[in-house]
Length: 77
Image (cartoon, rainbow, N blue to C red):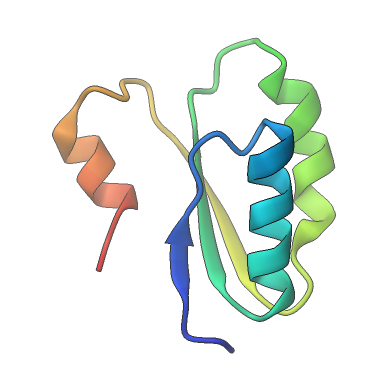
């Protein structure tokens, strides 16, 4: 394990997917917050699933990205 804990916002985009994949490849813990609406995320979510090699990844469904309580839940130390 690399000891890196990261939260990747925008993981349905190309850059977010690559960054998350590289972080988990070195053994990091990555959290992917998402809205959970019926959008392009549903298709990208299937592509992101197999990206973890050595690390751990978690998907957290957030309904309101303006709520600071929800954001502080996914963004830790």
